[in-house]
Image 1 (cartoon, rainbow, N blue to C red):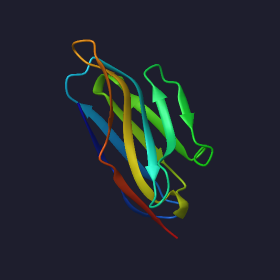
Image 2 (spheres, rainbow, N blue to C red):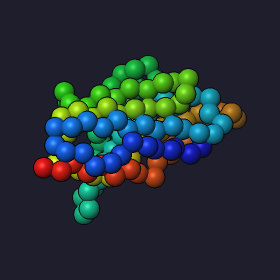
Image 3 (spheres, helix red, strand yellow):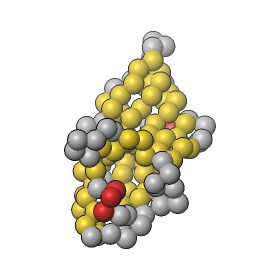
Image 4 (cartoon, one colour):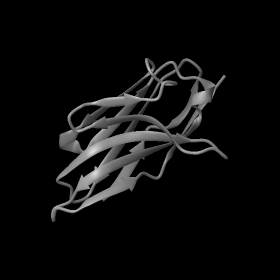
Length: 120
């Protein structure tokens, strides 16, 4: 299973970006998908997660500005980021948890990361 991310880039403060992450491979289901971000010399932090049933969780710093969604049939998770701030600048990583494979095994995967830069 591989996670393929897209949608990062450079945007001015107040602008918007949409990140996508598709899980590719032999997958029966994925329980939770989410986005994390990391800046140099700091720990990776949670941005938002969503379960297969649609339950969401957001970091306080992005509530009201970011929206996470997913398409279970496509094994794809999205992150719509609005009203972006310079402090949102980071490498954004996609994560998939409890990936159910064809033989019943569970696994977890991280994407390769995509850079989001917000200029002031």
